Image (tube, rainbow, N blue to C red; front, side, top):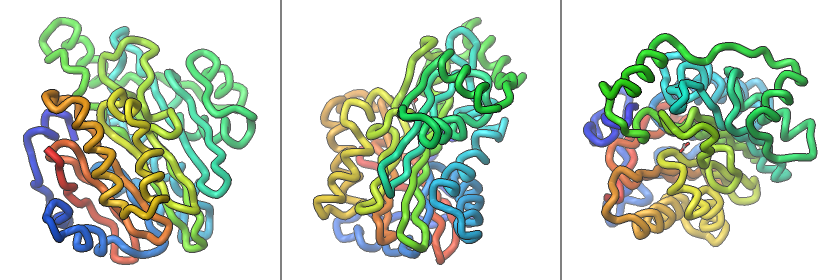
Length: 323
Ligand code: GLY
């Protein structure tokens, strides 16, 4: 969903969608009971439905939650029609598509990430190599490129004709200079039938960003966090706002304290709102999945959707808004 639509469409969804009712005073249970089940996958936005479908297939084949989130988000990274993630993402101010991605194994808290990486369609796969084949957590820029090449990843031009045209229009002033449009990160958290959890997060970041700008998505604890003893969380929206509140880590820590996932998400969003109550364009959304399959999701603004897959199916759901 484009940023402009995010503000405009409210809770309109297609026939396959259902409404979350978490905003009502007694609606917390109603919001999340519909999503219980194991294995479970939750992802940001409606494009998360097809990512979830892949992740669930991976889980059902017996593969790990790490494999599931990686393969799930790769579906969105490789889709040129999605202009906020991977191939087809809108570029930075210099016309270069710079990608941020991370992955975390909730069983041992191992994690890996890349930031400001250009030229690779699936940065989450490079992030997984960082996690599994290096002693490091985060590799950036030219170092990340060298690392990806050393691991056999193929370079390709990520700037599609449509993204190039949008960039030209932005430079010529024909397109609104709003960095906040078109950057709907995919975050995903998965729980397998053995109770093992993982999370992934990947984005092309803010359109027209200053080259080298890094958002929340590759920062463990901010764009994602996962601990199989508790649960996982991931973020979408303006990365700088997520970073200010250590968003995903804080959602998980609230759950660790016994707070319900829906309330954990709300509490962190409230911290975001408390910082910038008069700046509605600084929007943030979170998803959360507890180790028992219970979920939470909400946004500062209207229009956020999530995708939840469990034994009840795989569908887009309109999230509550705190504004
Ligand atoms: N949440 C993605 C970003 O701000 O880069």
